[in-house]
Length: 398
Image 1 (tube, helix red, strand yellow):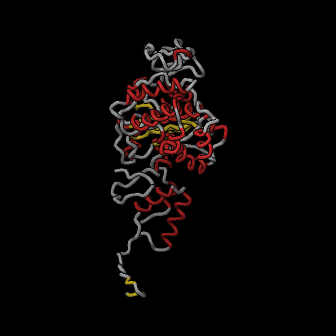
Image 2: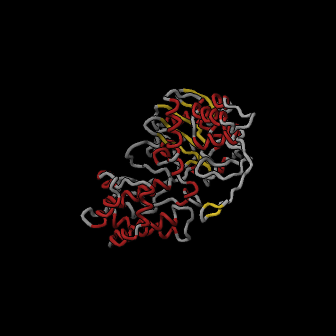
């Protein structure tokens, strides 16, 4: 058919009606609550776009197939049968391939399993209501999910790691679980590297308050938090009267003056500044040397691939920070507590889980029970037969 100077070829494809599996997959990708899922299904059914055997009412009780793996006790909704839950979600559960992440917000404390490599969805395993991070709540959580059985690796922020290992909170003298570094000897920060290795975590000795809940060799140091800490100390040590600091202020106008002076940046902002060639030209002297080595450490050590000479550059970074930064951040690094590819097991993916679970918390409007984690897990289930690629939704489990 010719239209003006254009020729239009009409191709008629075979009419397709949506199956139950395809509708479930669409609802999961759109992250629809039960009521909206039922509304979408009824509209599609009204327009004769669904197959005859598709049921709409199943979304009212969609969580019932998974709620059997969850229990509610003392304000904690936890998945107590991890193997059964993974099997129902068509996921092969090998504890060596997963890591455990715990974090809290103003509303709740959450625990989630993250797949190493981040090709599978995050599995929520614990949700505490109106409880902050403390040793007692951590103990209840770890017992509920049977951590002693699976012994996943732990990738959390340093506060959670200290709680899991029973260390005393606050500005203590021996705050490190790896070595016996004296945090009050300021003159030796950045210079001394041969601190004695901590031999035990026995309560009552060297700021240990409680019995450890996990083994120290299961700990992975949080690469994202280390990057944020290094960035924070670099910006705080910058001369605020020079052009480089002024450029940072102008380049991030939505960043408050308080956060700017304290060096509180997030990952995307750090990445933008690393790529900015003009910012490099504004730096001079010790600031320039510290920034160049920081960029290499972010890419060649804290990223997906480690450079062969990463130990040398980390050492040079610490030397540059000793000259540029007046306050301590990392006197040394224990490389054995980092994975081979830091980006593949970054704690950044655990932090993003806050966004995923927040919508589920709003749906239940503080009426939390076992249905909430089960409903959240339902959105992760995928039919193995689905072959099309998903553009920015969930992850197809096969």
